[in-house]
Length: 517
Ligand code: GAP
Image 1 (cartoon, helix red, strand yellow):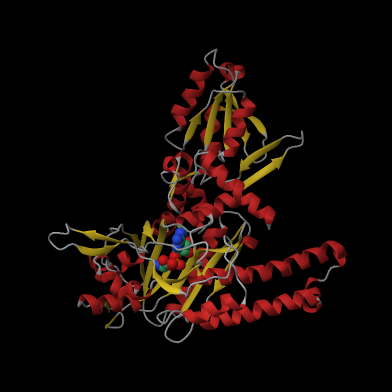
Image 2 (image 1 turned 90 degrees about the horizontal axis):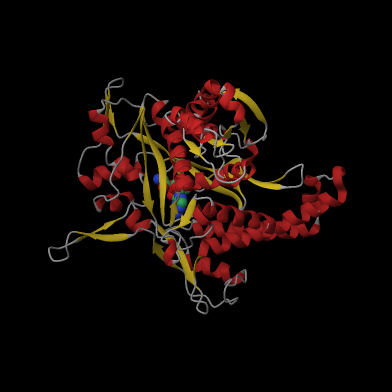
């Protein structure tokens, strides 16, 4: 665990050192849980967005995109339930004056029990080697059973208070914290306040105060921009059910606990798609979208074992199925995407609050109804983080040296090809520029002439550039270059005229998209 935390710290500093992610307003020491993407980060982020957008909008004839405003009519959030119910339970420690999410403190306590079990299993695994029977060990070892019972009891109690009639049982949450002896990590004391609900939406004012400014919110999800545009898109696009509307955009949440780098931010980006369907078909569509979205993730080649579904057993009152796609981050399996069957809740609420009829006339059944919705909702930043975590490697080379390399999927890498002149003379820089001038229309290229070739390779490995080309004396004679592969570090001699055809297919988003069909 400690080792994994170290790796995570290294990834965070790598992101800063190589221009992927900087703390926001860094010269003023940053702003809590807000980050800026640097010169390489923005390219990787744009590629992730392109992969998602094209897989949704380009590959599905019945999905179209929109780009709604961040500011929306305040009644939107009353209708959606966010004004009344988009809350987290918070608790303060009176000694340290630090604020925590009460539910997260309890989840961390459960994770401690899981860790203890895992450590026992790993110890026994080492001791018994190949003859180790994990299932039997888990079912019989006293310490494992003891911690499993503590975990199960806590989990059961936690579920009860979180899903109490009429909303979360706040006193019940506090009682668990006291009973479990959870202490503040800063002060080390149990001097807790009561648990209170805290609304996560940021408020601001529109219009000048003198002529009666109205309170509006920074949207906490992009989905509502899609729901309020359902009629506009359906009518102007003459869309027939089933059809989807996709959107990528910023969302804002005043998170109480904002930790783990870009995993939980106060300003982040979502890629959401609402798929409008005939009532009664939702469970079929839910299963289809679950499968498609998992395929989209696994298509990146990170290994199926690093993903899992977490089906929700307790559902929001308007949902009839919900699951998360979780990815194995250095700090455990964590949600990257949510897939929800939301019935007709949102459209009905907007119909009620706006007084507009939001229905679909089905020419096949001659009926009008409010469509049901399947939603797929993924965080761009969490996707970015999962890619970084999986790609980062400190590799020990056969000659005893080490290199830090990002094994980014080539199609998502910020820079696809780096071109180096071996030396700064004999026309090599000009030849290298010539290659770039020819290829820059097809993919992102970078010219580098400073330092020894070995150092230049290392810099490119560190930003995940899949290919490097070196222009040398022989190039000037026969128009061939050495092409070096980031992952194998193998070099081969190829003709300049073949470069595009060798590289383009491997680094294009199209190559990823084709594997989805
Ligand atoms: N419209 C549904 C919705 O917003 P959600 O589970 O609250 O559902 C969807 O959010 C996704 O947005 C999450 O799976 C996560 O990837 C991302 N997300 C949510 N809150 C986030 C935060 N504070 N920082 C970064 N990403 C976040």
